[in-house]
Image (cartoon, rainbow, N blue to C red):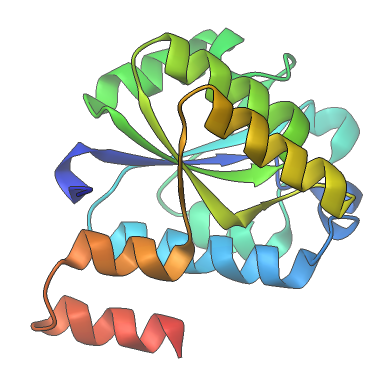
Length: 180
């Protein structure tokens, strides 16, 4: 079972026009938004990445508004976040080994980040309804490739209840509001 004290949420490159071109873009943004709110409820650190933000633009407005008060984006040029020293330092500083992975594109940046995380002894949980690509085929292949290399698959709602583990308390009530 996932434990909030051992988890970190990583959001990969949900930026500009590209984010709007993703298959099921609105559902993707809504699920990532829910993950951000849940991470806050569980005190789970969030690492937020942007691929070449000067060229691809900033993170989508809705997500940026949620993140900017407590987090700063980490810019990267490589497809994998692992190659950004600032990312590795921030991840190491969390002292957490369970990565909750969301973002775009599933078959490129999310996949390559996942591969590097797995190679460096992180347990990666791909949040299937919080990753996307421009085509359904590329999304599916990206997920399949990550699973073949040892990633675990989850979805937003299952993840929230796995982290919560019991149907009581104020946090549970707040989680119910997030999914309704």
